[in-house]
Length: 411
Image (cartoon, rainbow, N blue to C red; front, side, top):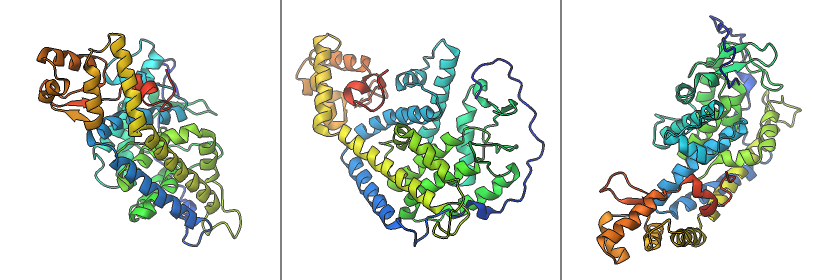
């Protein structure tokens, strides 16, 4: 992808998207067959994932869960972009969300890219999808929303062989052939037909089957490769939306973090799913069912690992100790008011507080109570929608290394 303004003169797109008549059966198997070896083990993983995800969410007070989801959104963006080779730290992402951009044009563009990703995920998290994430129109809308917020420099791609530069049109299918590694996706004109089949198969599944098929959905969309660029991010955003809907995750953990931490395995297993059926024991479709099963196992194990990681990170006892140690250090350094730790402790238990309760909790004067609130707000750990709205705990990216170690690398 071109990241500078030099020599950007996009090639003219073909007027007609050529359909070479590929049979939609080329994409089979789209689901793991009932009699497939290892299917029972995969169902066990689905059951484990459902239970763990629900248990984790139920343990968090709603205000804390909401605050955590904001940080996880930035984390998800960071890791998804990292898979694409774009390293924009969550601290810089957080700055971009506040309108604070780097003077370096390349870094600024990556901040804008991250901001676009977060904007789309926030839209998804807040119920923006009017239906299943596997619908053709929704897939296009995810791409349109993401690309519409990108700077022009990031909407230019270059053909690695011909070096021809082409412009990515937000929400529009590609109009030319492409090659991804060793895989040549379907012809441009065939994309609508394949996505119609994609929607028909994946849009009618029950909850368990949808979770089981999440990895297949992820790969088959990448295999179709409907857009000139941005397909990887659309796939991961769609996976996030699918898991959010079926598992009711609360957006409290990120599959992208797990994929990025095992990126070599992720890319290799994803590429293996492009392989043709190897023999009579390898399913009944055109593509390898064994490879699809291996990627599904990997995908579900990554999800379970990320739920376990976040559950351990947010263990009330350990988490509260880390936050309170930080608070006492800040008081000692005079960065927080002397009684701010009591307010912080109360917020850790309740998630939010009415402003009128603060003075009683601290057992101090109104002026002293206000100083405690102000000092916490200045540190970014307490937020409020207005001067009269309840106080809520926040999770600033700059403190993640102290409060939630290993969530993402230190800046």
